[in-house]
Length: 414
Length: 109
Image (tube, rainbow over all chains, first blue to last red; front, side, top):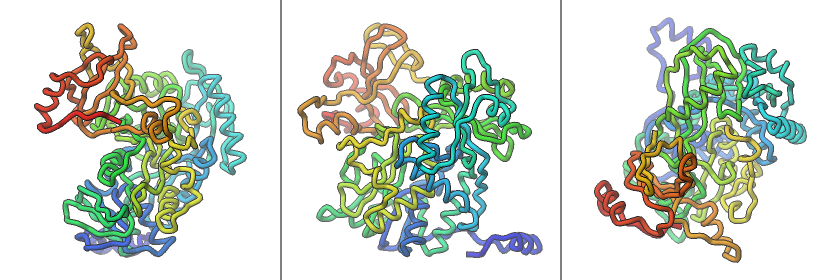
């Protein structure tokens, strides 16, 4: 792998950019790997990367049905924050956020992490109490957040209307070191680093079956033939149910479409991320100048990955009241991503009833921000059988009633 | 916009008039049941990519529950019937079989 640097850019400029090599190889699958990860999204690639980096397990294949980073990794609104209420969530998301800080340097790939600050608006009395409680919890967890009043909100976001009749801004939970990153680059950076370690990333290869013997996984059947493995990681977000079915167990998941849209590019007007959970909307401005807007989820199971007009109308209607200047913006694109929701709105990182088979799913509407932490914990779990980061997120917590209830704690958009 | 036909009045209902109540035809396990059965009832879902049965409430209307047989991949609706039905009616099964030959209904959960 050639090192990316300012010098490399200058060198290639002098020879008409003929010397760039492909960022990752596209090999044919080998007969056998120590570990197979199904799903080359951010979480799958991060898992593979930390397996190699932290545990020296480099005989790894990452198998992807479509193309690398083409699922929810490329469909989210790129927000990174860790202001969660429950301890296990705060630990996981803060680990991820802190890894994001120097991920560009570590991967030698610019993921454009921009810690511009994330603001969660309180627009009801209930939210004020909720976010103040979260701010106190974060202080105990060592996550740096603070409760700010409406004047400070207006100072940080001049385009906001803080005294709207329906949705007045009463304050906000502010995380200064939250922000955004270039979502595709996170997948690409991990893929490049995995490939450089000798791992095989096999795209356009669909897993059609999971093979097991005496209650232990021995390999997978794919559209490119059977591949053997010692350990299997299923990291496929919305399609986890299908893979779990192949592996012979069921999951407490429902797949729904989460809506997002993006406006035409405009001059810089808002340099923080603003989330308004009361109205199911959040907004940030991308480096290109587009306003990136996230909405709510469809209320029913759905695998269609398409937008829903009435949800967009609801989201935009409320956001226009909070941000009057966006009323004349044209929206360029809208889309839906299939998110896998658990009963307590927290993810599952766990061993499964099938020996040697691990699952990482259920990130729901908030998986992007967790990618490095999720990969770190999942790699530890797969390599050593235990991880303090993932121990609360087991599959059997539903049977035992040990919920990590973020559905109440974090409102809608998390 | 998803549109469902009310099995009681025959009216066509937009999804904005309705609330989805999740997977239908679940077998209820209440107090006294085993942990496994209760977990299955409470949390585990079929979550199919394809034919799905789900409960809908006409909340901004007549306030009645009904079941819709729907395809989660194509958004096609195969039929609706009252929630007091324990198995899908034959015409719904026929409509599903026309699109998915060989599909059979089974007891969920």
